[in-house]
Length: 317
Image (cartoon, rainbow, N blue to C red):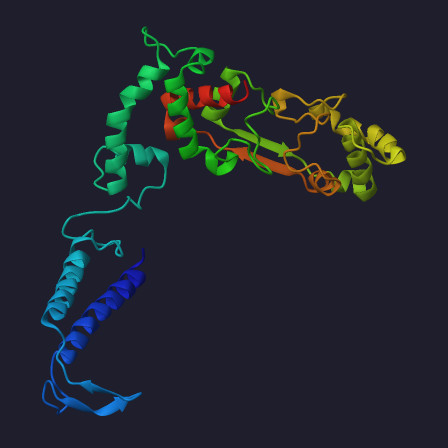
């Protein structure tokens, strides 16, 4: 946070606290000219107010909250980047800009987030290793881990924490994010490939064909692609699209069944990552698609990824 915003928030905070104290001080005095307990000279809806003092317990409680607010501001000034307060507390280290810096900072950082992460690693790290490794210290075969109910429960929780934001809590995905519960896999659904995907990530690129095919060509190739999946289309357009499909076969294959090696989807089934309507297919051809699956090896570590991989593999079995 810049100096400007630090001063801005600090000044506003102090004004509010001091303002509350001034207001409380003002209402604690009898400035009405009417003795305490006597009727005030005004009425409202036939009701006459008495000049009664504010209850002492209420005053004491309000002064207490003001004092606590000042102490809290000195102990936990989370609104400033230039001073961490009397207790040196921070929610997280905002100076970190990379995973490498985060790992190095983890050993000495006093931020609450990092302390919680370190405590969790100490508590659960041994559990992850017990479930992921065999007695010889080698990773267990993923097909065996996928049959271990305890490992699957842990893998599911790790999935919910780290993967569900894109693939959904039920792992069925959404537009642009693959369904992990079926047998349709862009890069292959065997256990080792799933783990490789999680470790290193994937970056799919469907080029835009508008400039090469033209608008009529887009419509024709879309018709052919939809015909491959069993849809009723204009046969003349589909025939013309089949001839143009040669530029697509390099990735999707001459039969349109795709290739795991390059992450090209199968066009002959009814699974569509970005939608299977004619409008969606034409948009894909016209503008291209760029899907990114981030690499998790530096974020989670291989032990956790091994358990998540087993869980994901079990979903499609």
